Length: 126
Image (cartoon, rainbow, N blue to C red; front, side, top):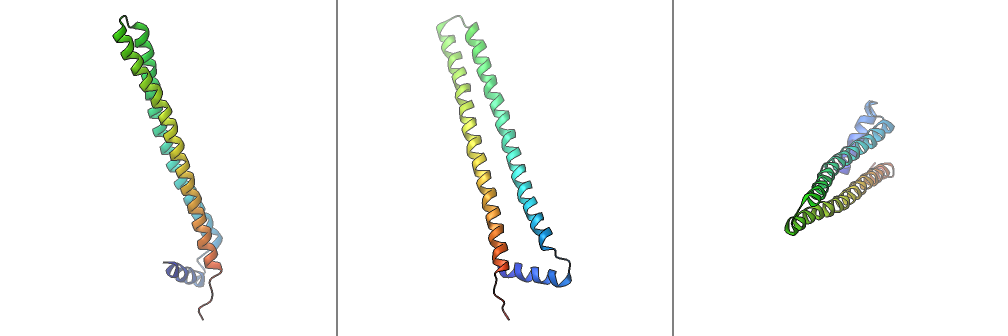
């Protein structure tokens, strides 16, 4: 695959249509666009479920305040605690996903830098 990319790059440079700086900028923009899209999706999922968990906590609190018997109080406290623990789990989930997305972004940038360096330092095959 790397040889194919080198041949393609050389062919485009011969025609005068290939701009190395422009292609590098375009690649970085694509990586940034991918990163922004995935991070936006993760934030959306996080906020939807986080608000649902806060709603569970609010309903549990209201139910607890209006409960008259011990069994009802225990059920509402359990409902409240499920909502509370779910908020903690959603924060941990977002932290893991955010770290994974950042790691993938950094790996893609390193991969592009390695490809760029291997293209510059390639020995001539003449």
